[in-house]
Each structure stands twice: as C-alpha cells, then as structure tokens.
Amino acid sequence: MPVTDDSWITDEVDQLKPSAARLYDYLLGGAHNFAVDRALAEKLLAMQPGVAASARMNRAFMRRAVLFMVDQGIRQFLDLGSGIPTVGNVHEIAQQADERCRIVYVDYDDVAVAHGHLLLEGNDRAAMLAGDATDPRAVLGARETKRLIDFNEPVGLLALTLFHYFSPQQDPGRVMRHYRDALPAGSYLGMSHIGSDLVSWDLEGVINQVNSSSPDGLYPRPHAEVLDLLTGFELEPPGLVTTSRWRSNRFDEAAENQRYDIVYAAVGRKI
Image (tube, rainbow, N blue to C red; front, side, top):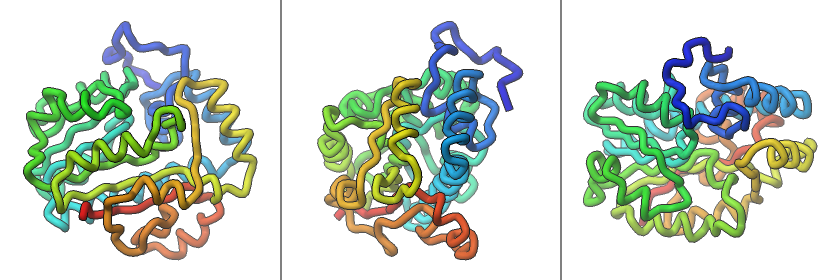
C-alpha cells in the first residue's frame, strides 16, 4: 500500500526516481514507497510473477540467519544496504531474542534513512547510518558504527541482496575483503545474492528494465562468483544454496517455491 503519512519525507527525497530499497519494500507489502517504485515493481511482476515470492523468501532467510547468529553468541550487527528497517527487520528479531543486541543499519536511500531515523527513535541500541556500503572506510569509521559496534568482539555482518547491485567496476571482491578484514575471528557473515545461473525466465529483460529505470544497476552472478565473495568465511551447513533451502523447516514450501527462488544465500564464520 502507498504512503499515506508523508510527514517523515525530507526535502532531499527524490520521489521521481525508483530505488531498490523502496522497490523491495513494495514487494514485501510495505507502505514506504512511491508511485514510481510501484510502477517499476508492477512492470517486473508482469514480466515475472515470482519476483515477489523471491523477495519474501529472502526476508525469511534474513530472519533465520539473524536468529542463528544470536544463537552463536552474536550481539552486534552491521546491516549493509539494509533498506527500510520496517517491522520484522534485524533490530526487532535480534532484540526480541536478546534485548542487549545492538544494530547499525546502513543505506544511501533517502527514504530508508528518513524512515529509519523515525522508526528507531528512542532505541539507543539501534541506529540508521546514511552511507554507501561500497565505501567501507566511511561506514566503519562513522560515529554511529563506532558507538554501537565493538570490533574487538564478534560481529554479525549482513549483506542481503546487496552485492548484486555492485558493478564489476566497483570491485565487489575488494569491498567484501575490506569488511572481512575489519571483523574479528568468530564473526559471521550473512549474504544473499541473485544467481544468474538460477533464473529460468527472462533475466535479461528484468535487468534491462531495472537498469533503465533505476540508478541501482543489477548484476546477478553465478554460484562460483558468489562463492568467491565468501572467501575467508567457513560456511555453515548447508553452504551456499538458495534462500528457501537454507535451514528452512518448511520443506514443502521450499519445494513449491523453488522455481521462483533465484537468490543464493549463505552464512559463514570468519576463520
């Protein structure tokens, strides 16, 4: 549903260009998106109805990954390219499991940042950082990061449906290495990434539609290239699989939705 209360929208927000964060929000049934985001989403859904199911499966993986990390003793999370921190996002999941958990969300989308500040007001263990995840030095050195994240203790790093927006020219491997090197041993990485070798439908058409309509380009990668991004992390079973197959206890749903599951997912422990 569309936004009905626009009091949180700042003057800097461009309502004429779609964004990945607001597109994802719409696909999940959220309310913090604009007409331009909904128009692009409907074009994608007309091309491939499974796009919304894929988004929901990625969201479900996020929940399982966060709870797994909490079970391993992780109490601080850095969520890169977080999007809009709506209901059921990392801070709610982690803090319901243990109220001591601390979370820093990072995104460069104006709506995600504006709504994040509003939603997290009064929560001194969570913060929204306006930042570009492709600039690790700026993200890691930000005041919010330093306040909430202690890099002498294990960290849960989340990069969910993020790196497929990084072009080859942005060198995603270098970006990941910088974050990995900042993490102490025992930290965890949760990652999901569109797999170019998973898609049986018109992927090129979807990519062209996104790239021609949004400043967030789309760069799906095959299994081997996604696995390369996980170098330095020991993958937890079942390894790098699709989102619906990563420790889901609803195997019937996983089988039913497998044809729509175009996103690889993994959780790894820093060696």
